[in-house]
Image 1 (cartoon, rainbow, N blue to C red):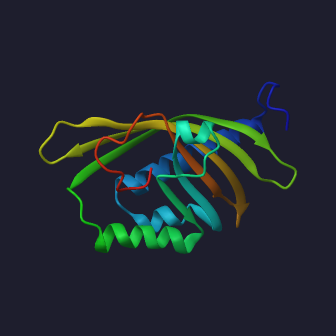
Image 2: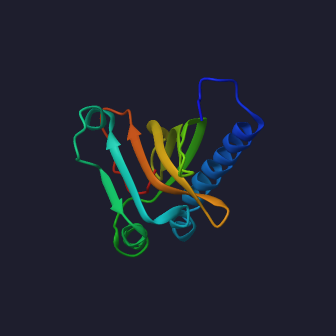
Length: 166
């Protein structure tokens, strides 16, 4: 689909579906529901968190990298069961959802901006991270799933620690 022409009703419906997906995705993480979080991805997914600098330079180093559902589940289990970190509350806001491309195989390239706020028990809440999601999605069993989500963060550095997925 040529994304330079005025949006059609189908395009508007797809954007609405993507907004709902991103809202539900953010809510699953805000509620620490990692089982629900992993269900947003295909079995063969790729999930990466990468700095803008590394992304622009096409460097492979990622702050978080998970390949496949097993890797996502391992990440979730580590947070729940083994990781030691200062208690925190995290809230995400997602906006600016865009459809970048529709492919003949039915896959969708999309992006959205995110802002993540963090509250630690002994400090004022602060803006933790900002950036954008770069997604490749496919439809399985009637719903869109993330085959690839690259979270490109604009921050110069991570202020505390990156515990939870973005």
